[in-house]
Length: 296
Image (tube, rainbow, N blue to C red; front, side, top):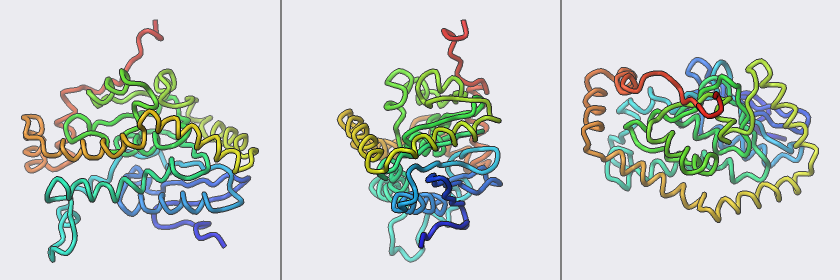
């Protein structure tokens, strides 16, 4: 009997018409990625991959947003970053401690390209920071045309530790987005290949369901072959190796002593994480990326 055909603390899991739908279910927190949510998504992916009744997986977010990023409440709580008895590694320590703890967390997100069955991300509202990382781990991304996708944490906190940007949009767009932390609307994300397609928000459910049903016609052995050969081709371009490097680069960025990083630390200490984010982002303004050559 399947273990996950029920709601849990942080996700819902449903199988219908050979489609497993895994829905992150923290709408009050905009589906922010706590360690518990990441673990449940990881476990549900493995369950869907195991079930013979499943041919394709859809990853979704409940409420207005797909996923607005990592759980700031968890990450900013010092009690979650320390072990008073000193028995276990914590992120607050050496460079290697940071790498070690992120490997444990991010490795669970990286199960998505590893499962044999194709995974479709259904993105509405915000897919920011860890939410963007999670979506870009998926094999196919369908977004609402007004969804916002980006990694504002690249503006000074670090670099995306799960980093598939280059493999979706190429080197120039990857640099354009990561060097500014700017977000891009779903309709423009489709134009640069970050997502497969973008549709009006009211049509998103139907669009994803139609594609999932079409993919589900194929026998899982054949779809696994198609997915895995494309993944190997990505690996020949360094995709898997790059994830390890990206994680270590993020840990190095955490050690930066540059003026921007020092101001961030001072703002967090004085005002708290959420206020520090507003202070950091204010200098960039609120306009999303615009693709002028298409508009004209």
